[in-house]
Image (cartoon, rainbow, N blue to C red; front, side, top):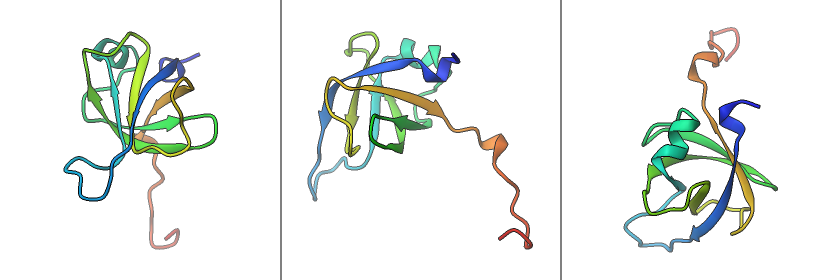
Length: 101
């Protein structure tokens, strides 16, 4: 199993409302958990939950327990579920040409 696919436990969820200053998907996790997955602060990663997956940026938070994440505005994932973070591999994106687009 690669580093990207090590599971994490959702220990918190933040749902925002219209008009909130900070809105949109976000993943908060410990810097050491991120380093083990080769994720840097601000990276966009795929969050795979039991029902769906979504792309979200990462923010570091030293106050979280090891192996835990807090998600903001990511639908289909609840507290105490297991998620996996997968980094985007932009080097493997297909090259679009006029014939392919």
